[in-house]
Every structure is written in C-alpha cells, then in structure tokens.
Image (cartoon, rainbow, N blue to C red; front, top):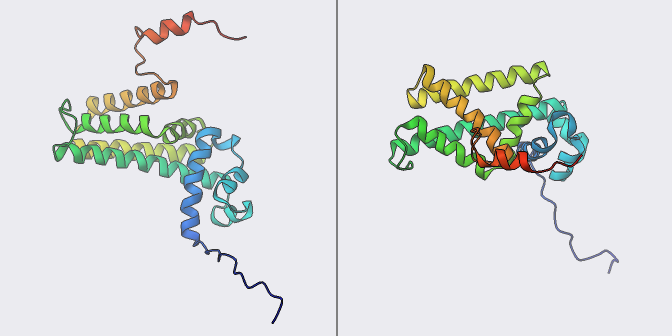
Length: 199
C-alpha cells in the first residue's frame, strides 16, 4: 500500500473568465464607490474576489478600464431602475401618488438610492473622475443615454425632463448627505450649523 494520502482534497472549480469578470466588476463597484478611481488599489479589488492582481489585468488592460466597466454597470443599474418604474406604472403597480411614468421612475430611483449606497456613491465617484478625458467622455455618453431613455419611457421632453434630472441630482446629493431634502428651510441645516465642528 502506498503512503499517498487517500483523503481527497476538495476539487477547486475552475471559474470561467466571463464569470470572474462579472465578479471583478461587482467588486469594483463596491471598492471604487468608496475609494474612487485614483484612491482604489487594484489589489484590493483582486483580494475581494480571491484572485491575484495580474489576473485582473488579464481581463482589464488597466485600472481605468476596470473603473469604466464599473461605471457602465452603475449607469445600467439606473437605466434598469427607470425601466422598472415605467413598467410598474403601466401595470398599475406604482405608488398611488404617481401621476405619470416619469414620477414612477423617480420613485423607483429614490428607492435605489436608499437600498444600494454603493451605486449612489459610485455615481459621485464617476463625476469626480471626469478630469480624466476618457472617463469624462464615457460619463457624458452614459448620462445622455439616460436622458434619452427617460424621454422614451415617459414621453416627457423639454423642461419636464430637465426638472426630472435636476431633481435626480439633488436626490443624489441629499442621499449622500443622509438627509431627505436640501431645501433651505430643512431642520437639519439649522441643526448642522448649530453643532460645533472639530478643528
């Protein structure tokens, strides 16, 4: 009888590259949401997925390419949220106070901001990274696609669509600050001004 170990080690499943790519994008959404393009080491993203950093670069030529993939995922999540809101309105599933598809899309978007902070903060990081010309071009394109999609789904145009996106940007800031509203009369503004700040 040979001295070989007869207990078999668990067989490690070889994860297809496409699946690993998806895992890396999901990890990148989380890490870039917190550290931004320049403040997030690729090693941290690789570690979250359990792969070596060189493997990341076999799927994404650069950290910026990985950031762009996370950026695309973030904007697509918003697009899916808009679609879901419009579908809910058409099917009579939207909140009762929704008067039209655009308002239903806004309610759905507000729910997204409350339920998934990573996607909220990654949006802010995408805008902050727009000093990079390639990132700026991608953000502009994806934002333009959202405007087009919102118009197609709701039938809104012009000032109504402008107001929708202005309000959406205000919601982004309010959600990042952890407040409900940015109106000048909000109680949190007075409370914040009254609180002493550490120096």
